[in-house]
Length: 283
Image (cartoon, rainbow, N blue to C red; front, side, top):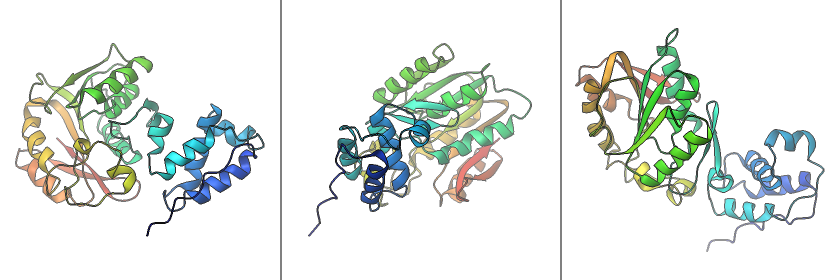
């Protein structure tokens, strides 16, 4: 029989104590229980996490904190609860219906910065842009660039357009509903893609499985279906001297590399900060 979830901490007590109690309650839910508690408390107080830790640990806990904790105990992603997620040098608005940006995906931007050392990619394409994650991060990195983000989800593109507007990039970022690059014309200096790459039989943690959109996660039994569509489109989309950088699952480097080589592309592998295979750089 499943035991009931821990009771969220009550309001009215000090922030310091409430953070400790919330972190304890998150121990079986999150790999970062203290960070989760701090992010939710900062959100409840309407301040940054840095301000919370520096100046507000002795405040009283607001009544709005306990409902946020209860949502996290139900495995709802922190980004959905707070409505924001930091990525690279920007902060993105996110919510149910979009893939939560993850720090591992910053590996793609790092690889692009290395590839374009000393020069600027004038045109950028982001396939499967979601809330604009990779495109807007790249446009922030290169203020002279313009780009196109494509996604099959109109809901995700609503977030992407709102993020571009809020970040002052609405005139540089264009978004279109599409089936990967099927309707995309022209050539691009930088192509980024974080497609779904999880096999349909793979097990996921509840906060991903029960909350994030399946279409942004799963790609057939072996997780390679999206690559089989995207990769044949790359040669016609890449400008001379351009590069395509694709996120991959930790076990997919060999299979996706073979698909890229079959299109006449040269490939190198980039690991993320955890040492896991994360991105393939194709030229």
